[in-house]
Image 1 (cartoon, rainbow, N blue to C red):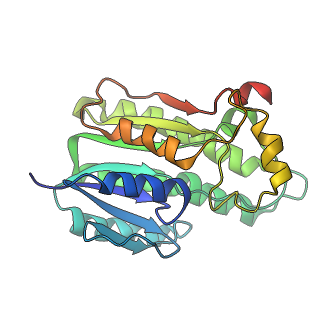
Image 2 (spheres, one colour; image 1 turned 90 degrees about the vertical axis):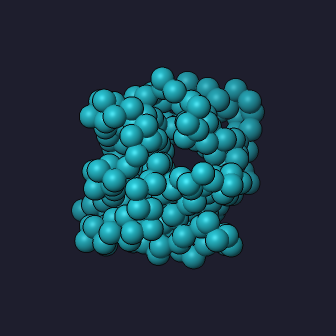
Image 3 (cartoon, rainbow, N blue to C red; image 1 turned 90 degrees about the horizontal axis):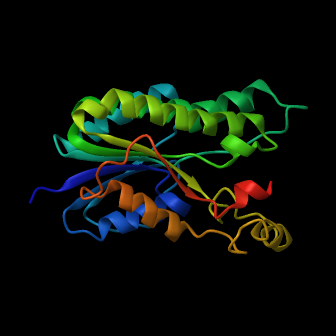
Length: 236
């Protein structure tokens, strides 16, 4: 059986690393990982491309490299990469806003737009958003960019539905990734109390959900949200 290719952004740490590893557990999967940092994955089926998703011209070049690697076997795209920088609306600067929109929203939109032509009919796209797209966060640029991710999901699901390409959003619960590893233990414990489970979510749990959405046997689910917040949205 020919290998199916999956593109994963933010593949070098946290959730992106976990879903890349899970996909590589299958003999007929190859993963193209995009990240600004080097990867720990060592596999002949893993193709790493150093990527700066805040640079729009860089994203355009990425598409060429991805297309060369995947040929006509591109099956899935998982948009995980995201950044959270800057301050609240008080003191927010243009540069921080622009960077979050570019990385968190524009880059996923460009990747989908430019790769969908070469994606297999019946393929899968998963966009990783955040519960702060609904509840809000201290940084308006982050919340706005993540809210835009589900709007992107809904539009793309409608656009690509006739090709049976399923497009869904995932809401991870609070978890420790590259973005949140500096949280103090006190902050971790406090956030954990907001979950109905009384603990933080793990990247492995969310990666399993993404793997479910990417599985060819998972059908009939598109334009949906898979929620791993364990009720924490309701405790804000």
